[in-house]
Length: 97
Image (tube, rainbow, N blue to C red):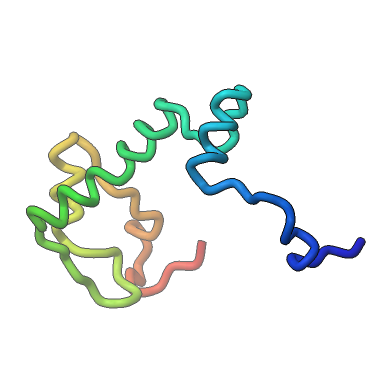
């Protein structure tokens, strides 16, 4: 297969909007997003944008630990708790699962 842009000199190329309009008239929805897909994208993006407007505290923790102490409170607010598989072992610093 040989393809060279030079061979298209006499062929009229459509502009981007002409292509979209022609696709719409022909019923080709390939280049169009459905409304439910756009709404799903915004459901993902909007919380990120909201966080940037009103940032909340991010809690750090040391490597190898169970995470920040504040995470316990988040779960406690929903009536839940972390499952610690090594909680009943004598050596709480080491756990082999």
